[in-house]
Image 1 (cartoon, rainbow over the protein chains, first blue to last red):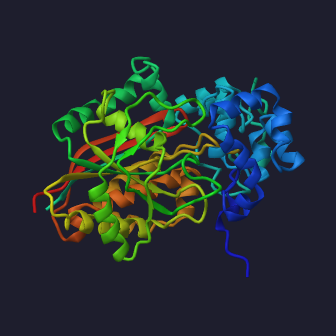
Image 2: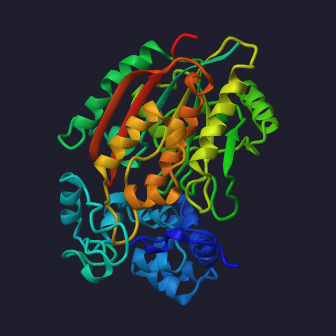
Image 3: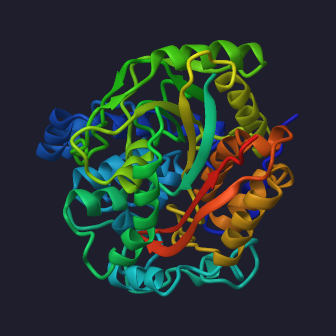
Length: 147
Length: 286
């Protein structure tokens, strides 16, 4: 009997459960390796060669090369592991978060200063809030960031 | 006999640590936040305990895909600030209290909570940012700190009810320690925030305020809140708030004592992606 996953109906949200962790195991291990300065340097020198040392799927590697965190999360990545990638590029957590919303860095920062994203319309898939699938992208941002 | 004298609750946003480390606390963006913690810093300077048991979550730093303990107690003598990818924060090393930690381990495990005991534990922003907020930037932290890491990253994570009962068990453990130590327990993380996906940036001020009200007045009922409500209402990372229930469970009123005194309550939006919440509760005299 499959275990209950009552969290699948929240829009724009992926819960990092044990199934996701299994899919993302090597992707997340690669990210963890970037906590060492010498690995960050090796990755920056030749990203593709460094990625090819890890048994990740091609889709996971492409997501990393593009800094496309939504794709990385869809393939099992978790934001705290993926944050090592942003840190390696010298990016803040806010920059990383913005990159997943379709908002530009400035649009996202402005949303936060105004009190953040409203929960109204964003509780359950099928409502009409700004995080719902039919309202993406939300602004003038693109996935990823300059690196 | 050791006593739990107070509990402190605070968000542990990494950007707060970065703002401190880079001398940005006077910038208009950050000033209201740091001003909000000034009364708390004064309170802490006058109430430095012997030991802080600091409940936090590791953010895939010391623990990760290789090993994910649900509850991990730091029994070591010292803990180094971790390199989370930006280089380690320039903060002092954390000195533990191995004797009290060992006592807590023995008591709490025999009380049916299966803790993982850790001696080598690089501590990330989850632990160091709360210390910075309450202590400022000293050359050495003013007291011993026992790290207590809770898994809130990989589901399934412990329930609020389990966390609250664990806090009660920690209080029993502390109060059965012979040496007359002054112990504070801190619960960190939260409040509403989401760091992932198109819903990133979610803040729910009304829900957060209600959480603070209920944490003070009816924590045992609050502990019944299911995970799904945290995620739906307070964002996927808002789930960190279950850790506040460990600290709250360690207060005397949960074992028949008088209600705690609210010394400080503060709330601010935003710090980077996050709503910052903060409480200080002092135990009443028993």
